[in-house]
Image 1: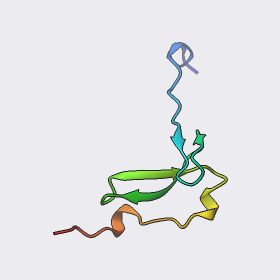
Image 2 (image 1 turned 45 degrees about the horizontal axis):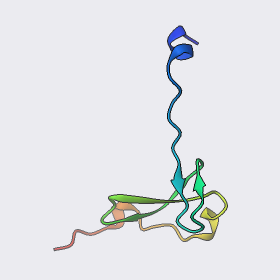
Image 3 (image 1 turned 60 degrees about the vertical axis):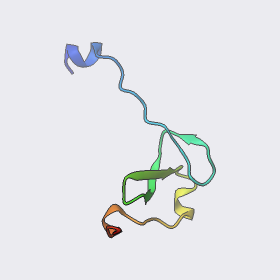
Length: 64
């Protein structure tokens, strides 16, 4: 541990709303990508196993 690590500001906590139940969670699990893989949707650890994952960003085809 260095002095810089002890005196640096605390890291920001990532918080996301669950796509299924709507609750805010800091243990977000990525479950869906939308708009050609640009937007990532998250679920809480309780709801994540209940959701079908995907599509993943590499499963999109460009629209023409």
